[in-house]
Structures are given as C-alpha cells and as structure tokens.
Length: 184
Image 1: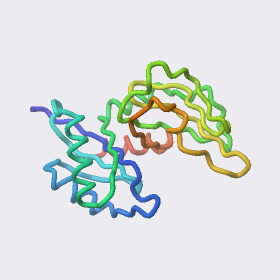
Image 2: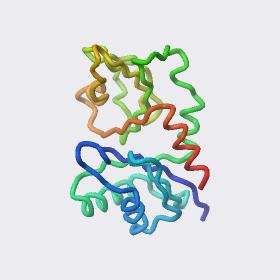
Image 3: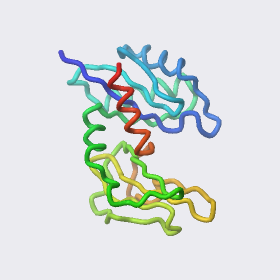
C-alpha cells in the first residue's frame, strides 16, 4: 500500500508548563508504529508516514490516548497531509489583509469543521480576532495586538456551537513546516 507524509499539529505542547522534549515526542510516535517520525521546532509539529488508506480519525484518537497516558495531560491532535496544507497555503487566504507589526495571520487547524451556520467574517467583541474564512476543518484567523495586549483564543470566536478543538500556527510558520515535512 502507498504511504504519505502526515503532519500532526499538536495543541498545548510546550505552553503553560506542559514541557515535552521533541526527542520524547518522536519516541512516543514511534511507539505507535508510525514510520519516519520527525519533529519541527518546539511547538508540537510531528511528521510521519502512514498508509494512504489510514483511518485518520481513528489514528488521531490513538495518538491522543497514547500521549495522554505517557504525558499525563490531554494533547488534542489534528492530522493533515502535506498536499492538504500546501493547498491551504496556495489559496493565499490572507492576500487582502494589510500586515502591520500589530497584525498576525494564523491558520487554525480544527478537529471538526466550523458550524455551517457560522457567518464569516466574524470578529471577537474586543476586535482582536477575526475569522475571515474557512476551508474544510481549517479557519483563517487575523489576530491584532490591541493596547499592547496580544489577541485572545480564536476558539471563542467560533461560537458556543463549536465542540471541537483547534491549534493555531502562523501562516508564515506553516509554510516552513510544510517545507520541513517535504525534506524528509
């Protein structure tokens, strides 16, 4: 069976006192029988290969259970293939956004799509977050530093109907993540 490279975007790794060395993450993924396991930077980006027919939802649950058992805390995991992330980057969803030192562009990788009735664009009450669009299970979020205060959590803008998890990566960092995944 053919294999493809997956990127596991892990939420809440190396933030808020949840320190995990990348060497340890690679070991944990290898313990699951995943091949060619590599990591990129310290923010929970893991690359591995698996069969193209892999049940992604089941694999995500397996990874989450294994990480929880080994690390003692929940690590929501979002899996994407390299071509899927390349497609998001190529769409250039932020092409009309003026970037300033106060503005950051983020992809929020979601475990489930946003609610179908969520009207976009949608801003937070403070105006520090704006979901400008979405593609499948990825939200395009513009964050703004206001009065020297960084933006809040994008999940609050998704509305109370959203029951999934998300993990954000800056748009420019996501391009670097894909390039690193392809170097494998």
